[in-house]
Length: 166
DNA sequence: GCCAACGTTGGC
DNA sequence: GCCAACGTTGGC
Image (cartoon, rainbow, N blue to C red):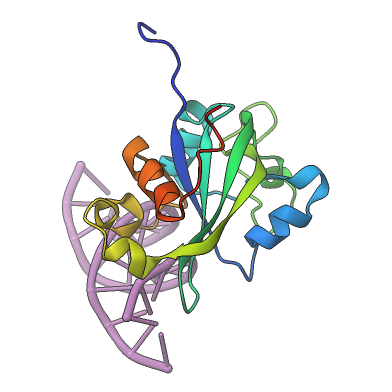
């Protein structure tokens, strides 16, 4: 609490066949809830760490050319993932209840495309980006922190002004 | 399609 | 509490 709140940055991973960046753009208000995360480490980030106004790199995984395809912004902080309470949901978890929610989610909103996308090969061949969490072998977190310099480098690759700075 | 890495489960 | 078995993820 000593220092002022600083914007943080995150990478969120999705299989585009399941939910793509295009899907986000076509959502109402360009907003979606980031539901269905069922991993405790990621849950803790969603519940405790990810704050309104934080920046998000949207990553497409499990495809031919895995890539960071765009930017989004956190517009609602951690709240209970209600899909866990729905027996018909494929993310249903009977251990989670309204009184004692286990799983959490945030809402994110489309901000900008990365054009062209920053591919995994791009990341691999960059001295700073090769160290990103998403590059770690065996990493399976669907939400993970991104360092500020990593964020800046990625925007610089495309000559983009940081839409989060005015 | 393969398989390494990881998280979770459940028997003991 | 250990750990083997299993299911899933995700790059390649």
